[in-house]
Image 1 (cartoon, rainbow, N blue to C red):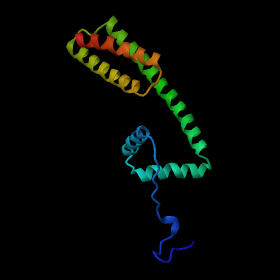
Image 2 (image 1 turned 135 degrees about the horizontal axis):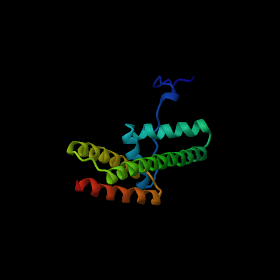
Image 3 (image 1 turned 135 degrees about the vertical axis):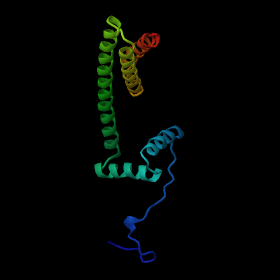
Image 4 (image 1 turned 180 degrees about the vertical axis):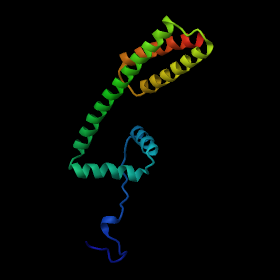
Length: 149
């Protein structure tokens, strides 16, 4: 380990400022992500660089990210489909045989609202237009039903 005699600092521990030019749109998206994760710009870029160094390839970092994105999208789609199916059954039960007492109705309507909110949250993460349309139609129809009672 060679030490810089002027500053008595290990060169491996020093930092270098880089001035890369990137697309404004990409930088804005990246900044939004890193802020959510509580990272400075330097920390976020360094983490990506470390991953590329570990893998020995920037192309491998991109391929791993794309593969992970596909798996994540499948997971979110499955979660949304499950919530839609669960809510459809719940909603159909209430349409077929609504609770007669006010308290029972309030409890059921409150649970329906929570289920709809979960569906709405998942819709924001899914890229499948057919599935998002199905969720949209179900939530709109059910919100009219629960809002009318």
